[in-house]
Image (cartoon, rainbow, N blue to C red; front, side):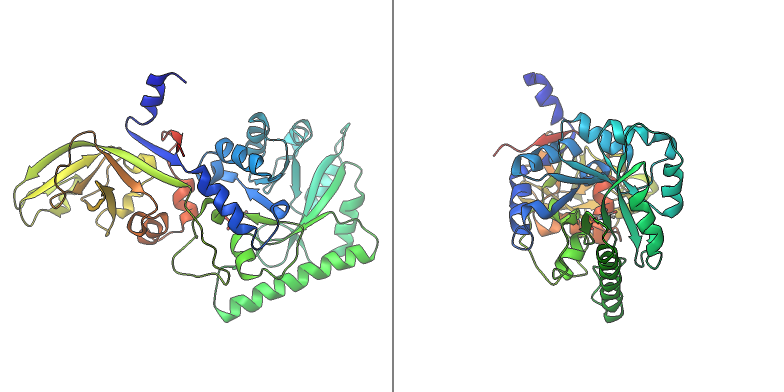
Length: 380
Ligand SMILES: *Cc1c(COP(=O)(O)O)cnc(C)c1O
């Protein structure tokens, strides 16, 4: 890359990826499962991190199994040079299934009727697929007691069934009723797998847990755990603590610039809607990031901070599409062009804290980060 282009990436607002932290998180995970049991969930552009940057690093570390949500994401991974197994977790329209073969992907069989439609196709190669079993999420999957239908899926001429899996509905919950429900899901899934095995079916890869499924129900032994959010070094929420606590390091941080610094008088309003009125004279700064970059507008007037010169400055007034304002009254020497950290490793600017203030989970906050933010790999 040309020097000037490299400079351009850090000109306004950008995502910085700490790939060392990613490697650290994988190491932490190997306290619970082996590296070969990690199915890295890299859907939604690797939770906003950048799918290829993340998958390349994971491949280098030795991870060979990936999950994505869509056919397009699977193709994107392959075109990015990823060689391992790629499972599409979601529905792919029947008329697009030939691309699953072309790009050597694995399609989820969302239910029996989907399998029958595949059976009716004329294909010159089998589609690699995994059976989804519905154990209580009630989103995708064949009903647990339809064992005969699942057996039939294993015999369909157009299908090469290489696995079977299910998904927890509330693996993160600490409420007893939810825990009982999750345990029931485990029992029922195990029963399905055992029955199929007992009747001589080669079930293939068996998996059930996602991040919280692994951390709260580690005793379930599958061939894989589908790990998304914790791979990126953040918990979904600060409101629940999983049974196994790993020392995770966030992979992503977001940086922007100070565009302008000004002093304002008492009773001056700041930003759209004039929701913020200065109670005293202040020094404020405008920074080069806004809700088009994925900073939720609903954080306006919440207690939210950014980091400037190793201090924390509160966000004031409405967050705009491309800019937002902060109070730098107590931070000396803030000047135009300075770099500001919006999301980072400190608790006050952590993704978890921002998600909490935005009344959502980190998964949503991260995957909604704006496409116009360039990704820069942190130099180690
Ligand atoms: C997104 C997803 C995951 C990963 O979930 P995390 O909580 O981010 O680990 C696993 N399995 C399925 C079916 C998913 O849709």
